Length: 218
Ligand code: MD3
Ligand code: FE
Image 1 (cartoon, helix red, strand yellow):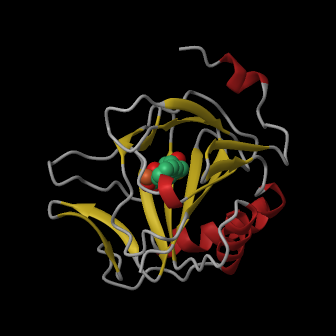
Image 2 (spheres, protein in one colour):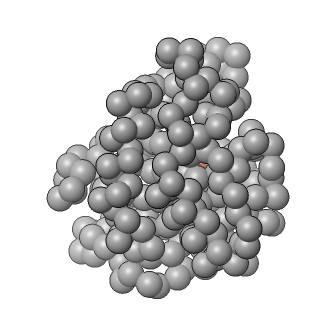
Image 3 (cartoon, helix red, strand yellow):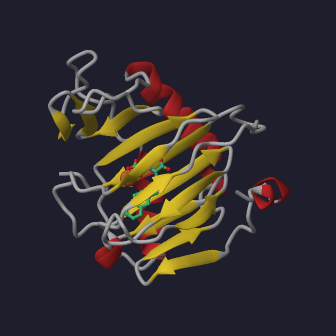
């Protein structure tokens, strides 16, 4: 696999918009000005709801570590995937959705053409080198008419953008620190994944990538 370009261009030109489909795009660098506020808010979330491995119904362990904030959080265990109003680690409600994340979600959705997005939850994934996410659909949200907004921070990753069917070919789309992806409408149920994170070190985040998906889940 040729990944040299990832390292030659640690950040794509901010302001550029890459359309993957009529209702799916990457807003390059859209989150850059909010990174300090996002990281401060995330530290508070993770202190209350620590990052942890989720397990699949088939007994596997996901390589990424995950946590949530907002009204509900996405969980996976022996019983399957679902949203839960409480964190199974401590039985408590998830931490509140930080306003900086909710606002970034609304602004990115509007910039991508989705008016009136009202996010209520955020799934946080932390990737270390070698961690990956297999092809899947996001279909546990109650409101499939709402878009999803995804913020990438840290080491760049190769996003795998598929189609409506698992068998459809995937396009490899690099996601850099500060990039925000938005998709909805006809592309809301597209298959997607993340290739194994390469070795690397980010100036702010060290050897990791954080992905924040801001959602309307209930
Ligand atoms: C396009 N996260 O948490 S976000 C997930 O980078 C997830 O951690 C990945 O997939 C990550 O569920 C990718 C970008 C993304 C997410 C969902 C999509 C793009 C999508 C759903 C449909 C189409
Ligand atoms: Fe997903």
